[in-house]
Image: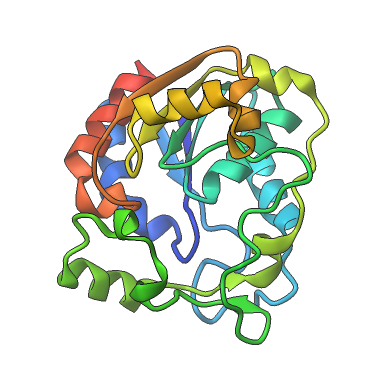
Amino acid sequence: MRVVIIPGFWLNAHSWEPIVEALALAGHDVRALDLPGMGSLEESRRDVTLADHVAAVVSEVDRDEEVVVLVGHSAGGALAHAAADARPELVRRVIYVDSMPLGHGECVNAELPRVEGEIPLPDWSLFAPENLVDMSEELRRDFRRVAIPVPGRVGSDLQELHDPRRFDVPVTIITCEFTSEQLRTWIAEGRGWLDELARVKTVTFVDLPTGHWPQFTQPARLTEALLDALD
């Protein structure tokens, strides 16, 4: 299966290398993306938009005529959903890693602190405790050492969606900070931030209790969950 991994904020393809290798050993054709402005600290990123990031994912989907599974972590889930909207006939499944589909007219996160048009990795005190479960001091140091500021507009630009066929694309939600039971309850209650997910016709939930970055805190269990979803 062709698999495209879309990193979340502050990270690029390098952060997913061990999992890419494990999925490739299992026989999958896997690529993690360096989104525009996120390849290195030296790249120019101040003028990069959310649409630029979506276009990069769609371009990878279009790279050949094979169907693809998209894996979106955190903010990468918004890009995966937009790509499924743009190419519903080519996306076989979207796997959201501690993430959700972002609806039309919504933004990823306009509240994160900005510095000169960029969003640097904030102080750990700004994150909720559930974000940081299993994030040891060593993992936090390693993360901050490789973190790349996010283009500010990627956080605040509004998502644009057009094709209702996106709701036909099956999804897997790998839940980390919340349990699948909590998410089902919140969907039934009609919580607005889950409206887009509630409209997806086929949803599979997988519980992986840890913090927001399971590729760091629980890489073996995340790999297993991804392989199960791909099968």
